[in-house]
Image 1 (spheres, protein in one colour):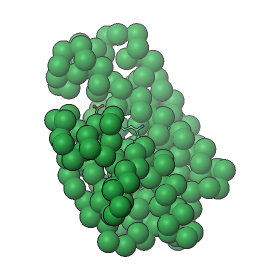
Image 2 (cartoon, helix red, strand yellow):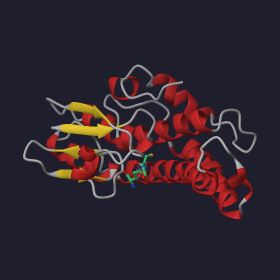
Image 3 (tube, rainbow, N blue to C red):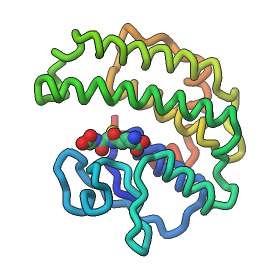
Amino acid sequence: MKLLKNATSPFARIAHAALIEAKIADLEIQTVDPWADEADLLASNSAGRVPCLVLDDGTGITECLLIATFAERQGKGALSASDPKSLAIAGTGIGVCDAAVQILIGRRIVSGDFADHAFDANPIAARRRRSVADGLKRLDAMVLDTPGERLDLGTIAAITALDYVELRFPGAEWISATPRLSALRELASDRPALAATRPPL
Ligand SMILES: N[C@@H](CCC(=O)N[C@@H](CS)C(=O)NCC(=O)O)C(=O)O
């Protein structure tokens, strides 16, 4: 099977990390640009977004949490993705990623360029910043002190959220420190699911 992804999408990272943690064999990775209307991506995902998992029979599974659900079932328990606390953390982590991505997309809608921050003055941008900041605070209170022997979906999503926010909003003064989540990230840093999917600096 083949995962269509790019290097920076937090959703693609969650899907990829879940597939690695679930020990899915013969996983091919195809890097695509979700903003370029690439034919391979549009053929498997009408929304034209990453991630998209294409099975050997051509079935396309979109949405990172659905891919994680598939990974959990295929992996026969190697990925823990159904414990209620882990699901609560995963949902909060995805909420942070979603709000952060929406700020980037807002910038692109307003000025056509991620680097132009005109959108950031919009009240919707302020709401999304609040979601990011409050979500990270909540994750900091919720996450495990140490990663389990196998990473669970909540831990994957929480660390992905922190890495993505730091990538997109380096040094932002509206984001508080996250000592527990940062410590968990450090402890889990060499786990293949995280190390092999880390976004570029
Ligand atoms: N809800 C989706 C979100 C996927 C998504 O928004 N991916 C972004 C990259 S971070 C994308 O492909 N954007 C291209 C576009 O919106 O056209 C998921 O959980 O997988």
